[in-house]
Image (cartoon, rainbow, N blue to C red; front, side, top):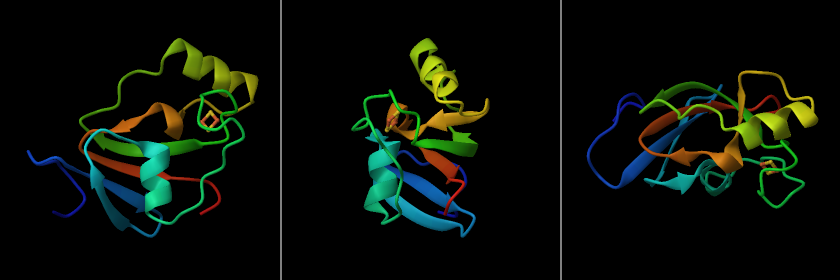
Length: 105
Ligand code: FES
């Protein structure tokens, strides 16, 4: 697997940018947990409860595509002055292949 596209197994793939490092995890894993499994830091001040928006990441590619941002995600992001276009890693599950970039990696 090259980090693009998905297969039919229970495996999911997180590609950590900008290095392009590939981390394999279980399909359905919460993204913030998968990133931490991969050994990269991801900020959180709310114990991944969708309140602080510190876990916001850029997701330039996802297969299958991400579900639209929910109202509570958008509110948490705006309340914490996180720009449009970023997503909360504690609110996303890895369902196939996802490419992720944090501002401080
Ligand atoms: S960890 Fe706080 S909103 Fe995601």
